[in-house]
Length: 151
Image (cartoon, rainbow, N blue to C red; front, side, top):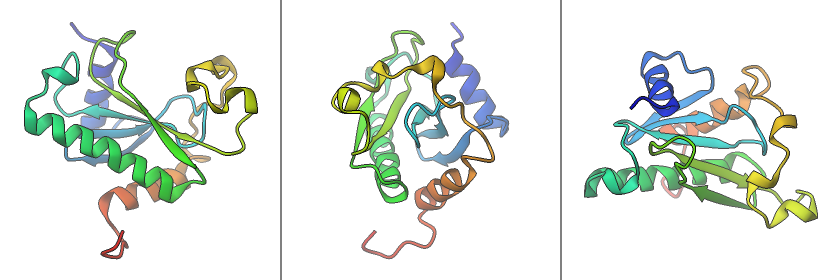
């Protein structure tokens, strides 16, 4: 079965995914097509599998570590106060992780709710020009470029 995740991974491999941030040891980091919250990213695995449990021990550990690394990069590159991580696979039955920065200035009625409660149809779409500075900052952070040993 081919899913959108298969197509997205193929586009990352070919360098044609429009919001590609970086290649990480376990796969690919992209910015979300809809920037419901600024910096919303996804992590796609190098090897597309149905779910997290289909990965072997080392692959699984690498994927989860990369997911946390993306969260660390988002905390360093945005004003986020925390990061939410979600692995669902209900709509697209292939492993992918949603990495969502959460902000202190979010509307009170949404601040503590899953980001799925936001108005997705009205959300700003990823824009290569508008989002390039953050995408480049995340790319540098994920590559370790310019970091001190404490980072």
